[in-house]
Image 1 (cartoon, rainbow, N blue to C red):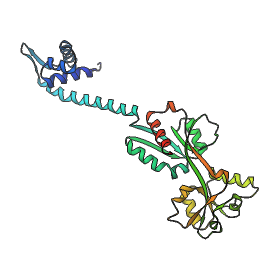
Image 2 (spheres, rainbow, N blue to C red; image 1 turned 30 degrees about the vertical axis):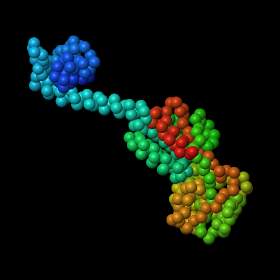
Image 3 (spheres, helix red, strand yellow; image 1 turned 180 degrees about the vertical axis):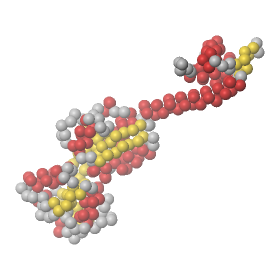
Image 4 (cartoon, helix red, strand yellow; image 1 turned 90 degrees about the horizontal axis):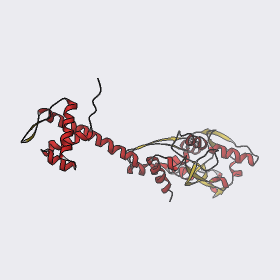
Length: 299
């Protein structure tokens, strides 16, 4: 048996006739010829195999079936209007889903406030945020596993569009009373004189410290390695060593822990974070809105 295909236009004209009382008034409301309305109603009755109006020289009178159809038609038309409205929201970026990969520096320092303000403005947007190291982020964006990446500036061998995001300053953290806390700034040579609480082996921070130590021809005295900044701060506060981490991330823990920040006077301690996308023009409207929002937040 063939499926019946009801025309939304015919249903809308039917509802207009029911609400206005006459074909002529419904035609005027919908800006269509009365003969066209009458033809649509006849076709609708044929499709439904049901008489909807009793026609006489006095006009048309709706049948019981017409009143039953009226509620059904209104529900269908409301659903269609809702589909149209929601799809327009997706097209304009008001609704949608965005996959974001970001490194720990961006997640702990900048993204919480920026995502909060964005989602307050666009509450129907779903953001799937995952923490990854910068090299993994670059590849994920290039492979379309992520829509947006936030990572350290650098050359990762991928064809990406990079946009400026935030400056990121690395500092040394040490427990209160540590010899380094008497200094306003330190060099890497002085850091290497002490035990270090390091980041996990695959992290950019671990790579930076290992590389800096190798360039100075000295060993990096890793006492312990952790996978998060809060764990690093807790270990430093316990006296297990000193650490290196972004200044704004460290400042979150200063009020609660007995640690202090010391400026790290090395060129590589001043870093830049960037937003990475494959192609701005190819982004979904909602992803483009998010890029615009977080890019504007740096000003």
